[in-house]
Image (cartoon, rainbow, N blue to C red; front, side, top):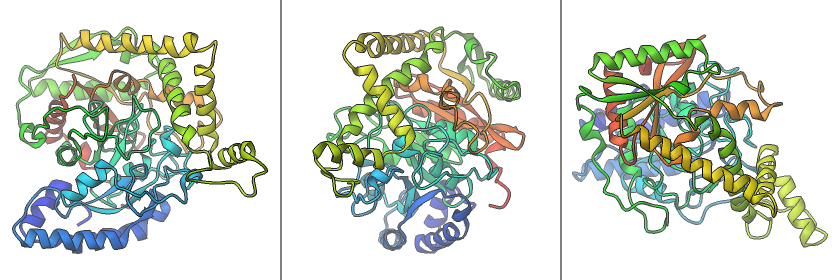
Length: 483
């Protein structure tokens, strides 16, 4: 049962081959047995899961149907879940139980999805390796000595290890797409505003976006269908109709114009990954796509711009964690300043502290114009590059990451080296565009992803291309040894 995709589960439940309760119990047992070697979960919600599974079975018995009705999933541990710990991977929120459900959680629960638990993540979503979590690093099921990517590494590792069919995740600079590439999954970052951020604990508010992680494009379409939509509680949510993402999966790729930026194939890209990307291009050409070389000239400035904007927004967002209203509070503070200093010093890890300091510096008097304002101007140039490119092509294709997953601890002493691994993913967040990573092969036994980018609100096009590619390749069907 654990090998089934979301789509297969939906068909099995509809055909009464098994119940949601039976499936849920099998997966909970599997998580209990196998997750200790992965550390992909922070909290398991067995009682809630069984309760939701029974309710889903009752709804089906009464004639209801739906692709997510009775389907087991997990939530990245920054989506607020009422009465359940929502830690954000941080000691700061280890004792925090959310008083309400995030919109994404509520929408998926209403659709009948069964929540198995909350997945591990980089602390406050700050990281590319899932090593900054206060609950310990997550291991990559393809090689337990390597990272699964971050910040959504817990969701990615759990789905890749077949502990569950799909999970929610978030992407601020590549945190859905990069873990998807590192663990042989399909991951989709929707257009900014397509999925509500209400109840999603913020890292960088103008960049964060929730999305699905699953094994196939078909499953991502199912999960995104349940997540997407306008939310009046979120002022950045877009009031745009949500199409039927599954309906367009079978569309032909004949005549589809695919742009390949020449800047993607620089000296920083592992040549073995470059070869796999070329193989993917050839496969899409066989399906009728037309390939065209394009240019994104300001891509080289994206990383420095991102690592000014994101920490600046983080320094503002994380100021609410002060030891007063909720979260970690130090013992016996001498005065208010001591309370602030020690609560934040004890509650935040090194990477979070580093980004808060960088952000506060960039926003400080005398440096705002030199750093933050200039970074925002670069952000506009990046967006303009994409707008010009999409006048010529329908989607953009390239590598998701310049290298395969690195070994645990390999970049801990050099944070900038880890930041540079986000070079291909960050631009979509700066521009607010939808992006998808899909499996494209292996290097040294480790998965590699190919990234697709599309114009605003064209998630359906990305899912269509990925689905057609997956009908003609088998990379996404490979399972890590031992799982």
